[in-house]
Image (spheres, rainbow over the protein chains, first blue to last red):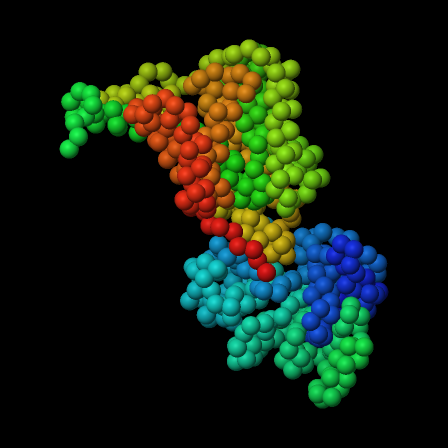
Length: 241
Length: 303
């Protein structure tokens, strides 16, 4: 999982959408090896669609998406997973009838469901709460526990890049802090794209920021440039017009 | 207390027991075919109304190779199983995938059309005669405390239970099975775990087709083989699946046995009209009182 061989993610001129509506209009995003990148922006900006385009869940009409130089565009979602993209979707989407253990094991589907014990141990070390709930069906977990499990599934996937959508949604601030801390440690060397509605949290954990609005990149730069409230508001405001 | 209508209390008890034993044996066939229906519904969100004709077509293959060509039942079974795999694969590839998932009625109509086509194909290929498949099943019966247990039906019960157990093991312990169960719960989340939708779809139809074949041979071996011979059993199995919640596999098995016993009890104690109407009555009652079935849950739309 060394940063150098994992390679970066690159979106060039990506236009994508659902049915007749176009959501992304020629997006350029670079994620360098080992880098954590935040995508911020108002509701409906197209943040989630960026992740879905990378995962192959939404069709890319033009432009290219590459991981480590190899094209992801035009591939099926399961092939993209196999190439090392782990996508933790909005709303966690854990399998409600599976236990915590079954959810984690299902994440190893791409490698035949084998060789998961070490990964599961890592997840349980990072999230002791899941150890207590190991045999419980995921539908009965709290929102925070479900988010831990969703992150845990990404660990089991042994990704070359992680996409995570609204990790903080609906969670208490103290839990958000804990989850981001664990996330940073679990994926220390792995590049990640972090979509957030909550800019301050994202800025703390990412080194580079893209601000999206109406399906276009309105601003981008090192996270340090956005830590001042005014700069971010400026980007958002620029985004609005 | 009301007096038993006929004979001594001993006779009444053994009549009841006999009805239950008969019901369990018939119910095992319903259970297996209900599994075939529920597996498709659970994973693909549609009802395969060609379940009976697919199974029947392959049962004819079994008869053709094993008996007509005289190659024995082992060869017949191998060819029929291969036929069921190919048929399941072809239906998925040729009808289900092009039509796309997520639209219950489009696929329901397509499978109804397929049912007509397959019934006619069966007639064209194998004729409209009534055949006895002479399955290698033991004859005679055991008398257990005044209850007659037919050996052939006992073997069938065993095969049905074995089939259900094998399916459960495949779904529980194979990677494909885990993927299928994950897909049934949340197709998109399963996709993000690397489960290919088309693999799940393909194997769901193949496994369902194999279950249909086993049920078809079981029915034919205790009755006869003819075009459309499995349709009545399909109605019962569909009822059993509805009773069990349509998307619950344990529910389908339980529903099969419950329906079998209810049917046998109605044969023993009720007018014939009730027996004939029983599946429809049960569907009506289930839909009125407990639309999710015995084991099912009403599906909630996910945000």
